[in-house]
Length: 163
Image 1 (tube, rainbow, N blue to C red):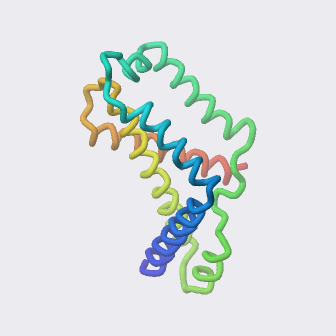
Image 2 (tube, rainbow, N blue to C red):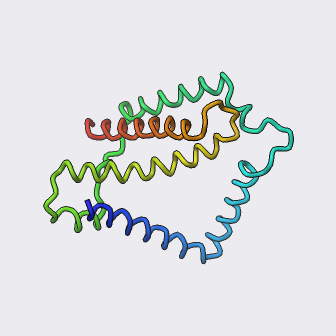
Image 3 (tube, rainbow, N blue to C red):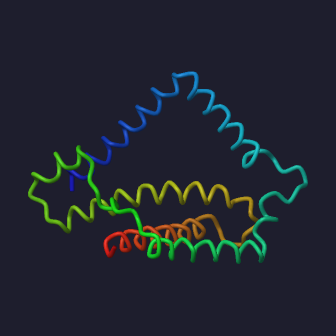
């Protein structure tokens, strides 16, 4: 377990360090500024009497989102899924495979790594939907979105293993 935590922490730290090095480049710095201004104009700007994103969360939008979810789920089966769903990086191969770990532990590690991406997406979507005028508190929205994204991730993984 300590090897898993070490690898997850080191990979995240290296990814953050690489991203911060890229920001030194004027091209990436300009993209960061433009992205920040876009996020501010869409999400952080105070409401000026407009309904904002809450107008997007009506009955027709619910139907469209449901159809898109069904198409996404069917797409994994009809068009094929990511064949590298359980692929390991070179660092993971060199650190984990010589270790006395079972296949079950390695799959558990990959599922844990996938949950990091799911949790980051959950935080983003809870932040986006905070202006939606929903009756659920933020914690319940986070749990609901986490269950949705985790289920979609496991479905994609299962489709990749079957195909």
